[in-house]
Image 1 (cartoon, helix red, strand yellow):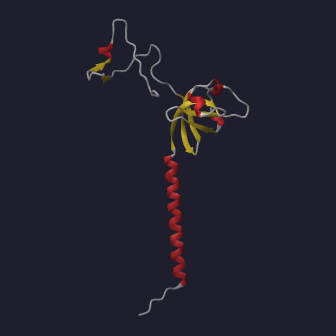
Image 2 (cartoon, rainbow, N blue to C red; image 1 turned 45 degrees about the horizontal axis):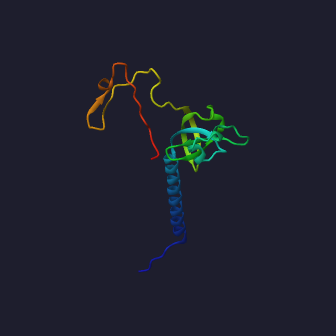
Image 3 (cartoon, rainbow, N blue to C red; image 1 turned 90 degrees about the horizontal axis):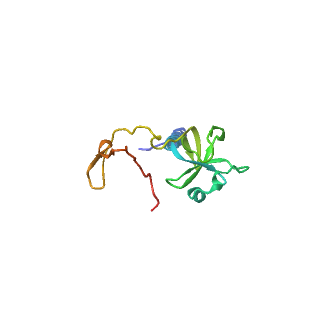
Length: 160
């Protein structure tokens, strides 16, 4: 018995294989774009400033420098991100913001930007809560309330 393969069927098989790899590559690229979507929070600084200067809150980071752009400094991972398009940045240098969009390299393509609020405003009522203290006892807003009111301090992070 002789097996014969026609050249047009080989060409069709090769074309199907190339098409399959092309589709797989596009699917992976689409997944990478979805994976790079998200939100980032930090401080608006001048792009003329580097991450170390931003970390140490150098006054240079809050100066408008000719040719420099507004960047986002994320102090949780000490990374500087370029922001595009720049005309969407409506807050001044030094403001703490949350940016939503997609990340490509070290540039965030912004979908939105908003001022970030941390904690309660002065005089605002705290919501009900319960947490364990360092001794394992449950504490609530009521158990912590003193004769003159309550001051709550939450320390977000430290570099120890």
